Image 1 (tube, rainbow, N blue to C red):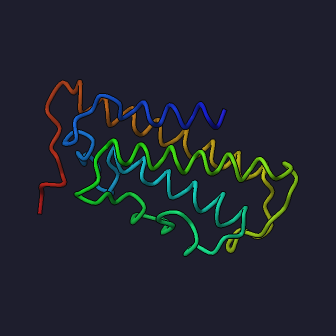
Image 2 (cartoon, rainbow, N blue to C red; image 1 turned 180 degrees about the horizontal axis):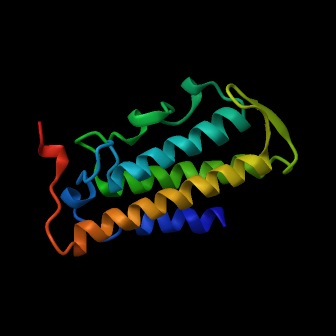
Image 3 (cartoon, one colour; image 1 turned 90 degrees about the vertical axis):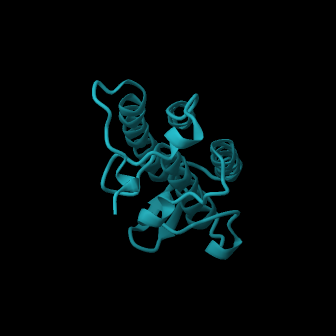
Length: 154
């Protein structure tokens, strides 16, 4: 199910232009491409940092949660961010394969969590964000009236 949610999240950006993928239609920094960037950060935090106990500095990319996790550099393409998310997801699969579902580790804010909890949390998070991506895509591709791009507003 997690891999299905990962694939659905990627599908929300497939076929979008670079400009469409960066289009901001909500007050938060959420964009279609930003959803994937955020998901890659979540993969690294939960599987590399929390489950594998790697220091954040040893993770293979960004680990800053919150609004900052949605920010995509101007020099990163949609293909780059899809590839980043796919690499992070693959690394998560490899890491998780070494642990039993009941393996317990400590999250700095939530306390003890097991791999089962991590899987469920990430599945829920990615399913929710795939829904966000579907709505953004629909607004970008099929809106009855052109939606304003709020990233161009002061």
